[in-house]
Image (cartoon, rainbow, N blue to C red; front, side):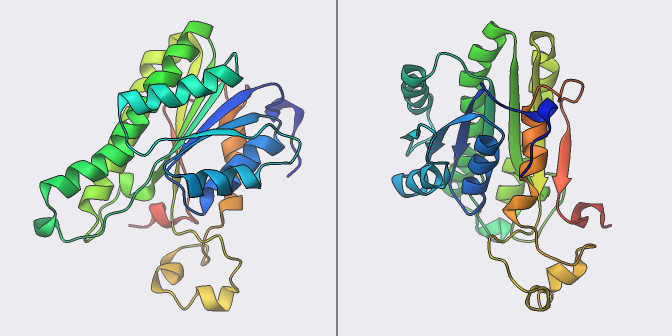
Length: 252
């Protein structure tokens, strides 16, 4: 995608922390196309390889695997980052592991696992990045969340609670770190597919017909907004959640 000069990420270093999924390679590509050097922290080796393979051939392809969301694991991943980079400008968190189960059937272990993988992992990575960014006096953090951060869904309570936690965390960090020139925002996404499906096929889904734009989102739809929120041009927006969901979150 063409990049306006004021949105260029040239010379900047980004960490993309992700649990994997179809959107992650596109997020990495958007950052790289805007000029950023991208370091990937992934939940497993397969996800890491897929994302690194999506990066341009000319870019250094560095990354780290964290199989558990702990302070030790996050510190270890960032130690690897520090060996290859001398500064951190951008952090993008995309930790969204779904659990769909009736509320009364969710075990405490399952609840804790969802919160650990989604909200605690984001908290820990933001801590690591925040220490570096506040010391430097500059940073951009973007947390990806589901629109369920602000909506309810049958069988989605544990996942929705984890997303609401990340959104609240985003707003609190924005307030706390504004004085350090660190901007913290969120991108909320709706019903997405990385496949280029014909509209007629998409609209067989009830949720697609319920979506005002009457199509699924594609990960490419996120890239331009992500680049803006990660750029120096994003100087007076912080603590905000911007939804890329075809208007779904505007529905009553």
